[in-house]
Amino acid sequence: MSTAAALTPINPPIPTHVAIIMDGNGRWAGQRNLPRTEGHRKGSENSLHILEAAGKIGVRYLTLYAFSVENWHRPADEVDALMRLLETYLDRYYDKLVEKKIRLRTIGDTAALPAHAREPLEKAIRDTAHFTGTSLVLALNYGSRNEVLRALRTCANDIASGQLNPDKLDWNAFASYLDTRDIPDPDLVIRTSGETRMSNFLLLQSAYAEWYFTPTLWPDFDENCFIEAVRVFSTRERRFGRTAEQLSPNRPKKPPQKIAEIS
Ligand code: FPP
Image (tube, rainbow, N blue to C red; front, side):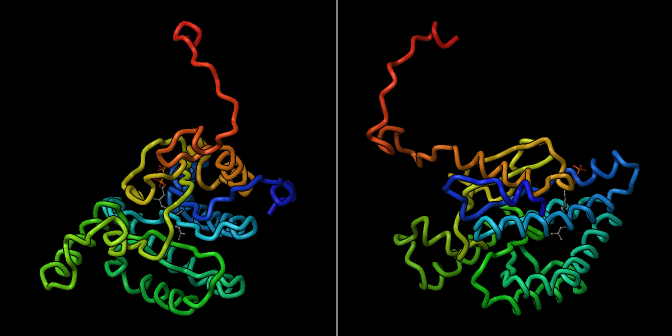
């Protein structure tokens, strides 16, 4: 980690949960005449640096969108390379997770991953389950619509079998069927590479998240970029449907502006 990032003070609040759409690996590689997989390799290395940075500033949950349900439609060799990369990543960073007491979790339908990636993943999840420090949540074969459908099926079965009273179904009860059941909602969602889409990522959980979009490609999104995103987050006013005055009753009231003055 660079000294500049380590020394940059950030005013609270620090987000408890940061989720990231790591976009731009392919373009990063293309700009260097490298194969796309090289961009993914560099991107996977970068995710470890960001995990370290997140832990240092007190972020408790870091969710990384590593493979979406839609990513299966990419060329077979790229899908294969991403799965091999996941296996390599787990092999290379297993000791680091244990040393830093980082708990690994996943969201998404991981049963569909190939065994060579799924088995080391399951081992790392098991072996780190007791850690209470930062959680690294990998979104793998994840898509919000898929997650909601899977939740809905289980929930409908519980209603049909009489285990759940539909009149008691409120948001918290339904959220307990989602993959994120024991993970707080993200406070900050970052998307790199200049795209400003949500891409089926934590659509329900990010209902009140602050979004941060940056043109920086994921392999170039270093610790300083991450700290800057968190700094911007710390300046945002989160109202959760309330008025600014309700949140800070002592703030001086601004006189209403006329439209002519605004334009
Ligand atoms: C989007 O970039 C990135 C992905 C679809 C995969 C993200 C995967 C990694 C960063 C590597 C694996 C990570 C871990 C943690 C094991 P893109 O390929 O769509 O880039 P482009 O839009 O520039 O083509």
